[in-house]
Amino acid sequence: MENTIGIFVKSVFVDNMIFAYFLGMCSYLAVSKSVKTAMGLGIAVVFVLTITVPVNYIINKYLLSEGALSWLGESFATVDLSFLSFIVFIAVIAWIVQVVEMVVEKFAPALYNQLGIFLPLIAVNCAVMGASLFMQERDFSNISEVFAFSMGSGTGWLLAIVGIAAIREKLSYSNVPAPLRGLGITFIVTGLMAIAFMSFLGITIEK
Amino acid sequence: MSQKEHFFSAKNRKLFTDPFNNGNPITVLVLGICSALAVTVKLQPAIVMAISVTVVTGCSSLIISLIRKTIPTRIRIIVQLVVVAALVILVDQILKACAYEISKQLSVFVGLIITNCIIMGRIEAFALGNKPTPSLVDGLGNGAAYGAILVIVAFVRELFGSGSLFDIRIIPESWYVKNGGFYENNGLIILPPMALIILGIIIWVHRSFNKSLHEK
Image 1: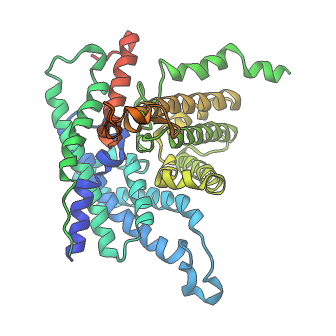
Image 2: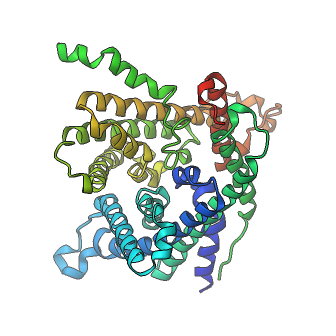
Image 3: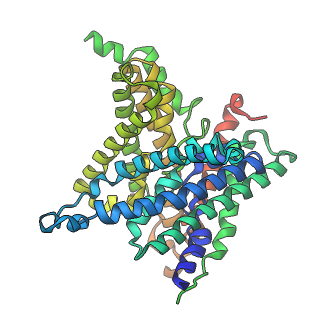
């Protein structure tokens, strides 16, 4: 249990998707002009990440990785389909995003109106794909750890985008040199935020 | 021969060079930063990444442009993703076979080329509505311009962070404090935040020379 909490805290603060791996930068820069829309996209990312990564974990464990097909019989024990993982993961993500969009539209129209435009964008959000690939690389031992990791990564991304949106709202009132305005200052502020996040580096919650 | 001349026509040259300045995918269009900055600590992986992205953008634009009339509009995103994913799998397998050490360093970031927004962006914005040759040139140009930014960032980070280029020592050993000199590597440059700040500075410099890109 402690290990699960440790993974969650670590993926929110230490291995933050934006500040440590620069994943999901495109939407991070494009949709961070106001806190409200940033919040909407952030919640959508947490939602999609928490569903897709565990699904991909199960697919990876029972279909793709080396020896995963051994439940089909002895002759399948040596089959290694891991070269297919990119295409399978991206298909799963695109499919789940589509299903989530339809379900939300049907059962929570209010939420759909808030998230509507962002949901399709998430299919090509690098943070979602990145989390699945990190999951494959890191060999988590059970599904609750994967849940903690995916939810933590999403929460970290949400924190980052809401933080930068709040700063950009204030920045629009300040006198930034003309060539640096907009994109340039956003990168530099993100860099400074990343340095601040590095102070969490020492956190470990181990059993 | 006429095909060849056509390939290097003025219009195609412009398609190739424009991404380096006014249409730069990173500093102007803000696309594709995702999968890239993490590999800019050293020059060698950055160059491998740059070449991989260029190959994938060029080929995917070409393929999509060739089949653009047969793709139904409703499912075009899935078709594009499948084409890009197939190309990335090829690149990944080739890297694993020919340059295993580098492919280990690049780790998940090769796979992330699939979700690199430049590729989808160029396909959507250009390849779907243009002939194969200009699409290929446009894809290659954008990939190369993107790679150029990666290489600049990696150059600065490796030179000041490790004192070397391509793992060849540039700053002499005897300059270092531990050998009785005066110099010390800047440890901060190796850390992720500095990639963002260096990119911010590149954008600043680029826009200082190009007034038309200033944001209000």
